[in-house]
Length: 426
Image (cartoon, rainbow, N blue to C red):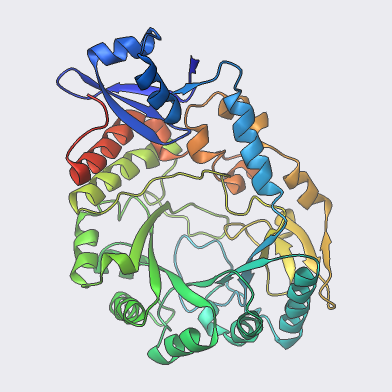
């Protein structure tokens, strides 16, 4: 047996050490004597078996990097599931400074909706068993007709999978919630709140200039009361990075924590974003400092703190059958890319047939495991290469945990022992 290449040791306190494996996400606490036995490969047979089960020890012949790449490739080659992010419009009733979209008035019409329906029918006939749809915009609630048309087809035919909507939440009325519950498979929404009320209203700006925070919060509460799950997204900037007051305001909404989660992400500067000084994080290292503090805020507020764990691939769009579908049925790489020729992957024609271009095949055949820095990185099993959009733009943005791994491991320990009152090995 040999030590896993993805083991990391950090001192804890009172002579104890934390041993973490990034591939298995396992964590044990060892005293100095047990650590010595581990490092010298003199563990007793029972403990050795336990450490092997947890991934800290692996067979001498086992190639962990090769196994990771096989997991990544298997995810790419998944053929029975179709995952689509569908833009029903690129119009929006908000004007957020970091948005990458140009907010033209292109919307998916009846012709495109019928062609999308034909494509889904063909996909099912060709062997697709599961269809997941993420409705997207612009603001998708400005054009709900395609949503209800396609969802009716999926629900009536009992197609496996799930549907959800990314929306700013401003138009999420009780009537619309009722229709979604009765007529669609939609059971979840991703809705952005950019910090406290004052912070949010500075960035999540309605075209009329009216504040948006209060109405969105009311709609989030209503959605959870009607049986929907809400992912509250915060696009973190230098201005809203103090999350303590934000988490207090979320708690004050009185929503059961089983009905929502909070997702933190970095507000990147795109081509169409407003150019603002001292607003965006300039480097991954700079963002990691803020993210580290954000995790601390979650712990203090007794939330499970956010973390970046990909498990299969660095991006949910890394699969043969995963696309962003534009309003004109052109296919693009992901929901974070501009809908321009650079990121086109092909298109769906009027008869529902899919046509893929060379850019699609180049993407499919480009592996993060060809990157020497990634191959030798201890957090590769967590990020699996990270954001592919950033990589395509020659702006590789490593996950924050890479830059404060010791702190991250201690947070995991704190979270685990707060729940159980004990460590694993002493």
